[in-house]
Length: 465
Ligand code: DHB
Ligand code: FE
Image 1 (cartoon, rainbow, N blue to C red):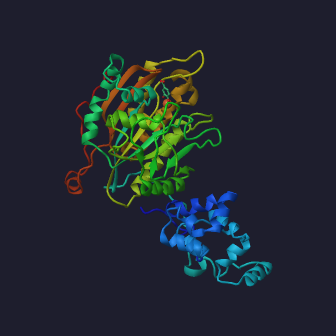
Image 2 (cartoon, rainbow, N blue to C red):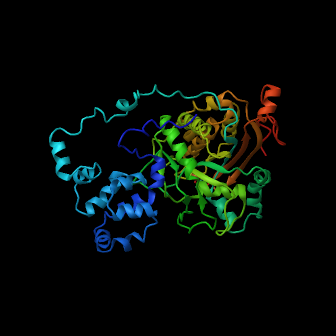
Image 3 (cartoon, rainbow, N blue to C red):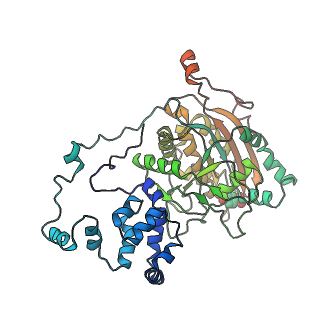
């Protein structure tokens, strides 16, 4: 089940992956600062003083002062970042590469002129008979008793006005009371079912990402995410704490599973992420802390082409395989999907709401997720409005659930639908994987039995509040 890192033992070689990037984060960012002439000047004038501005480990700091590139690499540096330090000292790439080989500058240059270093004797396969592994299989079954347990999926709209209503103390006004009534059950449930970490799938609304870069799937691998100022000033809620170790693990596994994620260590998070946290955990001031760590997973739905529902569902499956490979501390994990339901924020058709379609979407999400993946973008846009496309975010959590890996169907613990909040139909759903019996019970009973929650098992259509 362990992560595949076949590159670990290539002789004389350090491969820079998410784990190394985490270790070398400040070292690499310090190196990047030397791309500005004024910073190069300050660094060369007083290296110790310049380095005081960067939170480097003692080993990293000493390696920089010694201009010891091997030591910097061992501490998480990457050669393209570190080359900025070398350039500042006036070194060429050939001088930098040669400095790591134990050869003199002249000997290294002569070796290159002579055709370079021969691979024989310098390859992993020469050392221990290593042969390339067969392509990894994508598991379609789930791991029994995994250390990281995916317990529940939670879905909700993330309308910014909901956050504003909370921040401005308007939740008791009749208009807003109706919206918040749909979250009373959830807040009680959330107190008794606080996970260690939420993988929070949302879409950035031209906040962290502008037109300079359009990443399709962004995984937050950072320590912390400040609350964004979307033009009204930042919401007065706590900043969001990440889970870098688990995020790096997920990145490694999911990218090896053919999903080319964009990894982001520093980004602000907008209403798409903070409003769901507020809805579930209530009013918390800036000096308080959210009760969970959060791994943000942002899906581009701003600029077309956007990923299909099918692609999001498959990403969910890759996410579950990643969780099943986790061998770290025991974790209770929830995956949330936010955005939607029907809404259109633009043009003469603004205000479009489609109650029948929204409820059909929830019905299919619960009982027919694979069928739902066949619905094309045009279906979302035409029926649920241009911004209804946010609903593809919901497919990710669903693809990760037990029943998509041969396990039991989820229980429907809570379902709510209400029109309107601002321009939007509010949809909210909590569904849970069957609770696995402890391994000794499982042996006695032969298989797991789903646990029915209080409001579960109602006919789908009637379950709408
Ligand atoms: C609204 C809804 C959204 O999902 C959003 O991102 C922005 C605005 C609204 O209904 O006003
Ligand atoms: Fe939105």
